[in-house]
Image (cartoon, rainbow, N blue to C red; front, side, top):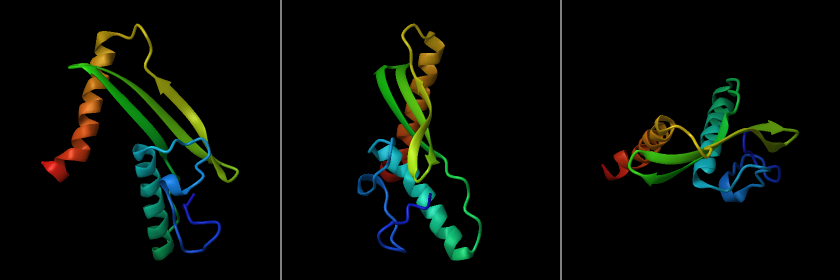
Length: 119
């Protein structure tokens, strides 16, 4: 789980450049992969033990102010591949409060990407 190429030692690849098993090719998933890759490279350079990977993907769909649905998937390495570990998907009939929480999470997620770049 270092994202080091199996074909070329010392080369690390993420995102669309890999066969990610069950992990989707999305920007959010690639961000998760890139962080693990960076930590693995840092561990190799410093001689430290690599931290356990935490791979995930999240998608928010904002339906209206204070109303959003979401799906979240966690992944784990299994036998040289990436497999789905757990899935959360918004359901029909969720409470208004749960949908508001989803909207707040979506706002926070978008703000994290735009604040420093466009802020």
